[in-house]
Length: 337
Image (cartoon, rainbow, N blue to C red; front, side):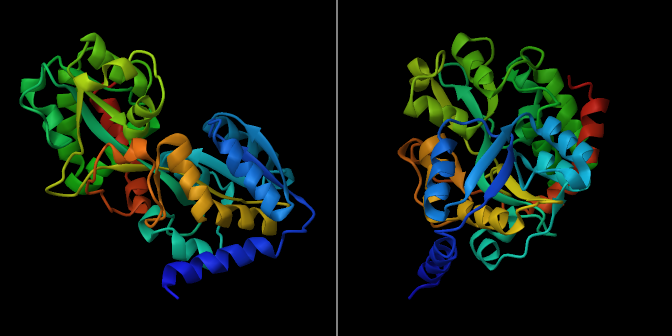
């Protein structure tokens, strides 16, 4: 029996032991995807554990857990991006998890070094461009700051967590001075002041408002899988580059979760986190929301496969998280809105 099949058997056994279980698990979730309903339903069927869910914005949920303190009913916090997971850890609303299943299935670089959070899906933050207008295509993140791209770039605000983690990774790999130069160059090269979400950056390419855009892959893959207004009808006009393939690889950010500091249903909560690392749950992340699973062996959805193979940055995201305060300082100094 292979190591992968042993782990799968271990996980199935862990879920089966609670098939007749009574009880609940209370989830505070900042993920708002319809396809996640299948995740919750399958877990309830497999375990008999009822899921109670409160949805909200990440910062609001963290603030709520902080205010509730030891009386919080939260068992699990689920949110997007390393910056928010780190914010929750620093706020003291998460506690470490000791799980052989999570340790075996989630790569070390995609979990907190103190086991307070684990990544369950990934998104690559990459470069998109208008094929008919860009011939000298930027190949790295640092290339985007080259003056030859002046007035061509659409990118989100510095308050966006995806950009904050990308900046933190640039600080980690290249140092604060290089990150400052990069931020200054991006601001000088913007086609417009930052506005909207990642889909809006892609729409900017289609409309001609900009020639180059930075976006997470799952926004584009979603437009492959189903109709996204202002993008899907023009997919053939958009090219893409996974940056820095000759060096560190493309930056990845996470959707993940952790065990609440005062979880009243701790055992059920740990089982749910372990379930998110299962083969079936990991496939939901890809097939239902066009993301990359964090468990390497899981098959990708066709929409994601169409983006092609690439080298991902395997830097430990716990180390990147340490650079988040510096990243914010760099943004402020560059007057990146």
